[in-house]
Length: 439
Image (cartoon, rainbow, N blue to C red; front, top):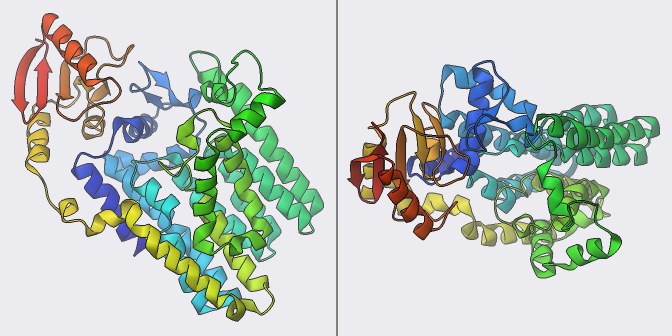
């Protein structure tokens, strides 16, 4: 059921040209590289840009066989839907065994419609979808006392994204605290060392600039690490946004999750996000909170199971959490399924597909951000208007009506005029979709 819901949102977004080059296009170019036996590159990040120099996510290679059979962005979107839906299986199974059917239903609904998962489903594809079921299985094993299994499920997080080594370390601390000290401390060390190696050695080795680019967002002084004063200032910046995120994180559990130490596994992700100078990391937008959802609901299950009086005593709070989840649902992307526009193809979308059909397979293209994922499976495509993009692309396709990123509308108009001055000729122009070709 959840897979069908998540898939419907993502697929309809793509069909309605609501997906983007940043980030679906980038990930598809990486998976496409793997599918053809190469290390991942993305022309959207720059000509021949190695993606292992951006984020360390070799787990994307597991999608290569499927993509080789069906080269389509839908492979990524459907895989994401399946992975996000899979996480509910260990959580609800554990909840049913330890706290009863009512708790299991509350967890299934709460996780299934949780805003963090909804935001990930509603915004392209991201590698963290692999982390969500891994965390669900790991924390379920941890909650049930199967500590080696908890570690076994956690360690692959090192292959998902570089910051998740710190989450592995947090799970190691929990394992040590629950009786397997040597195993826990070893896991903690592996997590910390893994993140350091990925951030300081592996990613810089692949990055054309020889560094981990995102490390700069943790300090306004790029030549040195942040001092204590700066850390405090950064933590205090946007405090209202950060507080709002924390409140929304705990609200679907009616604060019951605070009773479980499993919630500690959320601290590394919240830590790097809130210490970053990038405001995009602080709030509830995008995909950044997806990995927090299995943690929060695992903490809820343990809190209910271990609370004096058990599930019966927690029934009011479970009902409150379910009601809160229900109230939040219309504010996030899953609500699109109830909107008539989701199931209709408007004239502009139809026009876009007609214009796109002029571009032959194998061509080089510079495209507007929203048009990129319509082309990544069959052309070499970059973002129109971005410096250092593919030089002398054969085709340019631009949304002149609604496109406003990565450049301004005024800059885009200038870039189109400059392209026409260089010899690009108009092939088609429908409903604001302009297609240019250089003979």
